[in-house]
Image 1 (cartoon, rainbow, N blue to C red):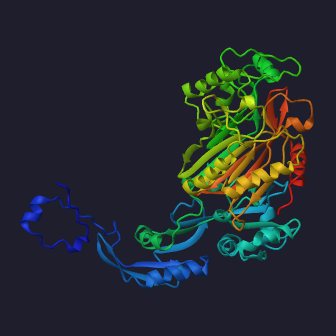
Image 2 (cartoon, one colour; image 1 turned 45 degrees about the vertical axis):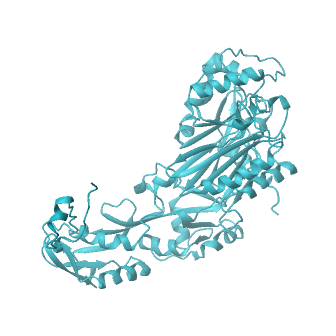
Image 3 (cartoon, rainbow, N blue to C red; image 1 turned 180 degrees about the vertical axis):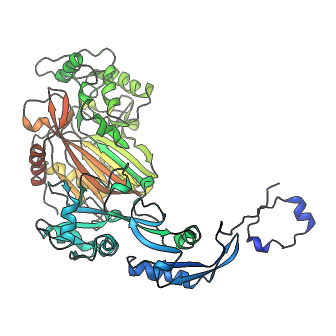
Length: 552
């Protein structure tokens, strides 16, 4: 027989139940009284002057409606005092991570428009702008002005509505904005503050200066916190348990000179410098152009275009923390259909999640589903270029050819957008050694965006290309188009442009894309990317920002 569970206040336990009911059920009583410990007298509460007026009014209404607290020491009278210093419990604004009972926490971000080279701002600079003493303006939203004033004093910054912040920043050279973390979208570039990144999933709240908490202090604080917490939801605007970082990369083809270098320096050589940053992402993506074969032999002859990687080279991708592999490249069948089958079997045997290629067209065009921290994803990849020998058929392996299945893929994206939080589509498009995307590329990528894709990535380009962010006010909501990331592990040392690399680190919070960080690298010795110097990075970013296509 199912157990009947009765829950009610302890002081009502004199309720009589029929004997036949008592014999047939198990009765569980939950004591809802607050544990009072050594507290026996009245509880007095004071709200500190640094608490914003809106929060003060909300809490005062709760206190005024509560004349006593039901505790293990009986009913304790509750009084709200005007003189905060005389209260046994104090409610105040403190820094995030304060050693007290936290009611709510709020994180804010320093932001500039997406197409900005600047990466960091000092806390001193922000505070000077806050006080009206800086050399350039500060624009803040109302919640920032109210809560940070508890630490920094009243602001001289321009207070502006959240929806008006972006156009105001774009119209004000040198301006920096501050807004709530949960109001971020890809139109903004988030600045680190003294090198501390609010997008970091491993952020230490105590070290981040743009976060505040509403706290309760005092011996009787454990009695007051449960009274206020339900009234002040949400408890946080940055729940690390709902945060996901997705790192997406460009062309990988560990063949030719890259493979020759790996044979000399070891299979982990390409990953040596970038691996820690890559592996720190919650989802690390690789677009691998070529088959993995256990009998692959290095062929570094001039103009060789029949490419493969030895299965031992997987160690490099493992070292960078690879979680998912897109296989939309036009070299996946370079060693024939049988070579493709063997490569696909290698992924399966090693439990490596793949998409974009398969044993047949159905497998190749199927999405890969993923979940992290409550955020759900569908990854789709397709090849929009030749040769036909790389395309999967009804019964032969290869990549999902985009133009033969375009309407099906667009409809799939529409349906996936209703089923998961984030749809990420990557397209192996026609190659162009220019930062400017081709007109047909812009058209096709925007069609995928219009169908419901939140992240659209070009994985064909051997040079960095433009990006196109979208925000809350745009049709389709927050997201981004990345027209081309350039190479990751590929031997094209023949020009500066082919040596430069982009890695797009997307932040997803509570089911939405809120930011894209553009990481930059430079290929050395045909095989090993390093991080771009500040001057190199500025040049790379300026190039892709200036190549952005006009918006309709």
